[in-house]
Image (cartoon, rainbow, N blue to C red; front, side, top):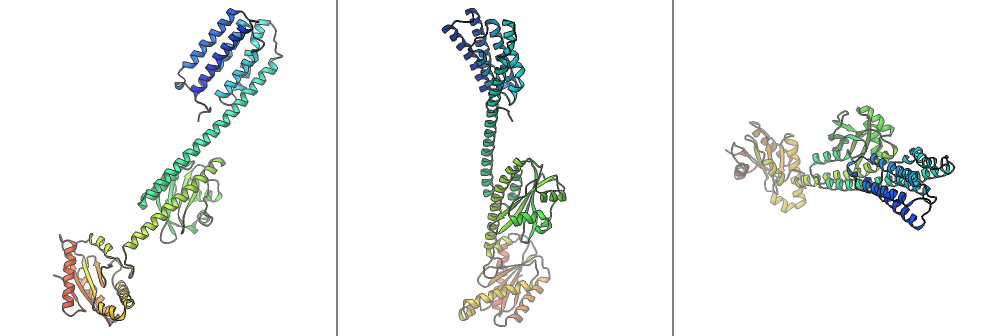
Length: 480
C-alpha cells in the first residue's frame, strides 16, 4: 500500500509550485524593499528556482518510484543554501522558507521523514550563516529547526490519518460491492451443487482465508460435505453437530467462531489445518449448514472484519440454501399425489422416459370404484385409494416404483422382473383379496420391447387391463 494519501504527480507539482512561488514572492519583495541583497543576485536566484520548478513540473513522476520525491526535498534545501550563500539571507524569509519545505515534506513523504531529515535542515540553515558571517549563529537554529520538524511531522501525522481513513473507506466500499455481488449470485443460483461451490468460493473472501469446505445438512441431523475449495485438512464424509464442541457452539448460539476462538483452535488441530473459523448457515428452520474456512490467524482488527463479513455471508448463504430447499420441496411435491403420496402422472412420465427393454409396466384399476365412491361418499373413496396405495407399498419390492396416474388407476414399473413378473402381480392380487373383499382389482401387464416407445408399451398394458375387466375382473392379464 502506498505510504502517501495523495498521488505522486500531485505532490510533485505542489512542490514545483512552492519553489516557483517562493522565487517570485522573494523577487517582488526585493522590488518593494531592496534591502540586504543585490539585484543581480536576486535575478540569479529567481531564475534558478524557476528552472528547478519547471523541471520538477514536467518530470515523468508516474514512471518514477515514490522515493524519488526525496529529490525534490533535497532540491528545495539545496536552493535555499544556494540562495543564502549567493545573496544572503533575508530577515523576513529565511525561517519561513524552511517552514514551507517542512510542510511539503510532511505532505509528500512518509511519516517520520521530516524527523529523519533534521540534520539536513540544521545544515541547510547554519551553513550559509557560517559562510557569510563567519560565526555559527546557532542560537536561532535551536528554535527554528525543531519548530520546522514539529510542523512537518504534524502535517505528516494528519496526512497518515487521512490516508488510513481513505483506505478504510475504499475497503468498505469494496466490501459493500462484493456483498451485493455475492447476494445477487446466491439468489440466482439454482443447482444445489453449484450453490455450495459458490458459497465455498465466496468464503475465500474472508481475510486470511486460503481454503474452505461447506457442510450441508441432510434429511437427518448429519452434515455432509457439499463443496471444497483449497481445503488441505481432513475430508468430511458426514459429521453430526454433537461430534465437535465448535459445531455445538455455532448451532446453539447462532454465531460464527473466528480464528482466535479456542474451540476453533481445537477443531483446527483435529482436522489438520493451521487456523480455522466456522460460519453457521441459518434459515427460518434452523441450522442448514456450516462453512469451515482454513487460513492464517490475523490481528484483532482483521478479526472484526472477518466477523462482519462472515455474518453477512452467513445470512445471504443461509437464505440461499433455504430458498433452494423450499424449491426442491415444492418440486418434489409437484411430482407426488397429495392423497396417496405416490408418484403422480408427471413423475411417471419422467420414469417412462428411462424404460429399458425387459422392464414391465403394470396397470391396476379398482373394479366398481365409481359406484362405491358415489354410494358411500368421496371420503370412503379416498380411503379406498389410500388402502390400495399402502397395499402396493407393502407388497412390492422396495425398488419397484408405484404411481397414481388416474382417479383409481395405478401404474407400477418393475425393473427387469423376468419370470417374477407374474408372481409379483398375482401376489398383489391375492393380498388385496385378503385385505378388502368389497372391491377387486384388475391388472394389465406389458413387457417393454427393444425399440418400442413407452407410449406403445402403456397402450399394450392398457389393452391387457381392459381384457382383464372383460374377462370378469379380479384377475391379471399379460399382453403378448
